[in-house]
Each structure stands twice: as C-alpha cells, then as structure tokens.
Length: 319
Image (cartoon, one colour):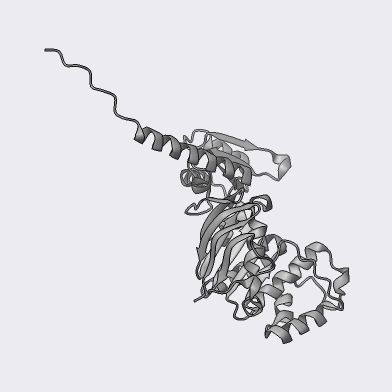
C-alpha cells in the first residue's frame, strides 16, 4: 500500500502544508492561486519544494527517477514538444512504461484521430491525451491529476471516473479541482485549500457541508413546469422559485434544506401528475466556499474567546 506525505511544505503559495494520503480518493478543492497546481507538480516530482519534504513511500519523487516513473500524473500545463503522430507517441509510451496507452486513448479520448501529428494538438487536446496516458498506467504507486474531469469530453467523463475509482482501491488518487460539482462527482476525502493553507475538510461536497447555513438551490426539469410551480406555491420548504420558459424550462428553487426541498418537489410532482426528468443540486462557486470557510473560522474564534471569558460575578445577596 502506497502512502504520499507532505511535511511542512513551503513553496509559494503553499504555507507550511502537511498532509498524508493513503490508498483512496482524495480531492483538493481550490484554485491555482490557492496552490492546487503547485501541490500536483510537487507530488508528481517535476519540482522540489522550497522547504519541507514530499515523499512517496519514503522517496522524494523529484529526487528519485524510479519513484517518478511510478506516478501517473496530469499536470496543470502539458507543454511537451514531442514530434511525430499520436499513435507513434502512444506506442513508444507503452513500450517504455508497459502500459496500454493506445487502448486508453481510444477509451478516454476517442475523438482524437491516432494519425494526427502531436504538433497539431491544441492545449485542450494535449491535456485530454495526457489524461488518457496517465490513466493507462497499469500499476502506479500514485495518481496525481489537475482538473481531470475538465480535461475529459462528453461521455468520457463517466469512464474517467470509473477508472479513478478503480485505481483508488489500490493507491492514493489525488485530484485537484476548483469545481465543487467535480469534487462531488469524485467523492472520497475532501480538503479545501485556500491561499496555500488547508482550511478545512468537509464531510462531502454537498451544499450543507460546503456552505453550511446558506440557502441551497435545486434545479428541476419536468414536462409541465408551470403545473409543478402551482403545486409548489404553498410548500413551506420553498422560499423562492423562478422559472423562465425561454431558458429551457428549468425551475430554480431555493430553501434551507436540500433533502426537504427535493422531497417537496417529489410530493408536488405526484400530486400534480408531473413527470420529473432531472433534479440537480446547484453547486456553490469557489468564492462562496471560501467565504463559508472564513465564516466558520470566525465562528470558531468567537466561541473560543467566549469560552475563555470569566463568568460574570454573582450579584451580592441581600441579608
């Protein structure tokens, strides 16, 4: 069983970052400015931290070619300049690493023609191909990926998630993303990185854990939205509702509790004889998540301060 450890890592913008990752899915939520790209590059071994240590089973990937060869990675920027065609590059990669890279490319990026030259690929296509190559690794010790779901297209997203879950049964899979919906789809352990610091580890990426205390939003698609809205008009769980027929017929509902809101929609649909096509929880953006982190930290600070204050003196008793 592999283990990745970061011990007191300083590498701007990272500030004294310490964490350990065993086998399983680990999602690092944050923007590149928060340090997610730096974490992936350090774990992939493409550079050393300014201070501290990154180790995979005791070896520093940046200082150990053998450790680096056992890491499947998707970097924030895939700027390799190999010549030749896609198929020739994948065949060479398979020979060197013992993988099935060509087969993986057909599975994870079927729209890329194998005969195309690497020089003709756009930046988006390079990342798509690099993701396929990373997922082709048969027995990696670590999988470190920056925005993997954003690099996949269409139906390949489900196949990428399936492969990641399979890899996570054996090795640490570290995914960095700024997209809360992508974090929710990956599942596993969640850590929020903000300005180089791990600020919290929510239980999951649903709104109740990501932005506690804030209103939740549910998007509903059905065959008769106006009839459903009329039925929901008296529901106490719905605090606000909006609908624009010109925008595809989606109903947007807001309330305090996502589960109660979904149950209210289900009951209303049954009562009105409406066919529900999709219920989807709207994901908060990263700025809202960071704002919630600040609010939680402030609340914890106030609670700690209140706990330190001495109890007020009792009023003197009358004789």
